[in-house]
Length: 252
Length: 314
Ligand SMILES: [Fe+2]
Ligand SMILES: [Fe+2]
Image 1 (cartoon, rainbow over the protein chains, first blue to last red):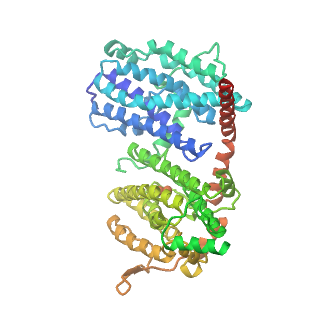
Image 2: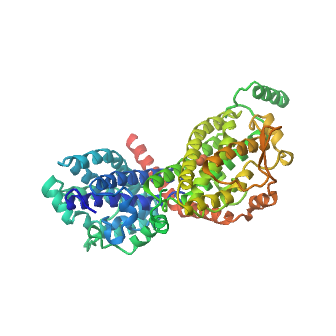
Image 3: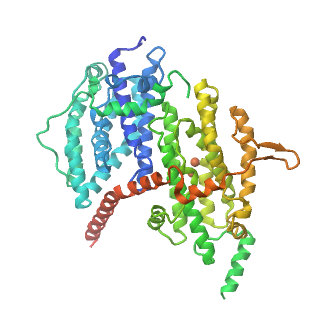
């Protein structure tokens, strides 16, 4: 099928879309299982925000491709086609891991959206301007919980520190530009490398307030942006795509 | 003294004056309300599980978002209802404990499994549909906080019902496999939905008192009849057969007649022998226990912050 825009722009849109979908999917797994009813509702809200954002990006991507719809990308590609960051496909494990995953990403996501809003790409700017209002809240939610868990009880401190130590190695990939990222930097002035410092500063401040230690000497994982994922994504997609695979080509 | 209070209380009820938390009320009225409202709250929360099942597997993004939003609404309903119940002097923790230990019940319908996508549509159509029949009259319930909670709840329930119906309508216009999925699902959910209105009036011991207190406005059988009449017409639009050979229009009564309900099954599911009773409670208990450290952390943090503030003020 023909793509009517630069393929690298298309890839970039799918990176954004897949990030939103995969994280939204993970967070939605909490629905009905939260630690307290209020947080069940809050997490569902956040999952809805992410999946809503995914739809906007997928619709934009589909508008550039013959015969594609918003559902083509989430339901009809296999693992190697997905462009999401590895961090976002990590399992929920417990509330601490879930919030740590969100915390690292939300802080990056906010800065990325700011960069997109200041860029020269009209359609992406529109989506980002809408999304950033939600992401501002996500940032507050996840940092508030980092503080509560980090500076809560002995047990919560240990648990969340473990999550920070486990997930930090997946954050390096945020700032390693893919071909699509390089294209967007050159053509539209969206430069992910330039937000790294601000991100580090922001997470260090929150971790410190949370009495949590910043991991040292980390070897960073990569692969999400080129579709080389962890073993976890295949299972996620098996669930996500189950109906479309079992009953292809039908309306639901 | 007690007697004149009771008379005054009943007079207020008869005059359709709402009872509010600070008003005097008979102990039996309070107990009945706690039992009913908490049962209702638990049903919302346990009801999240069979549907939550399908959030990660919804067939497209539009359905996924709608389902997630729906299940989130149910959590919100649980929250309003626990709050309404707390105005009667019982804590949410105590109520949750009653659910987890089996002391409190929840709607039996949620002890049936959702095994196909069509079940999500059928739950919306039949289960939310039956819930609306039961709940709309509760918006005029004599107890103020319950009545007000129900106004909010009912608005969302009717939205859920339309959404469920629309899922089924799409299946009915789909392929042969989809139409089969639809019919099979209606076959499985019809009778359990009919049971949602509770035992026949003759076997419903608390009903008369609840009617006198205006907690209940219509009898179980009256509400069930309305439900049947509504569903028969809607089933025609969906092109599905309701699995009751005795279902037919009765000119004289101006209603549809329907066949006997299997009360043996009903009471067994109530007693804990339904296909999912154990699973549902185990899942709830598990979520609660696994969340203990998070709740403890939040309150420890809040205490630390409060004492920091106190020091700053001093
Ligand atoms: Fe509800
Ligand atoms: Fe509902």
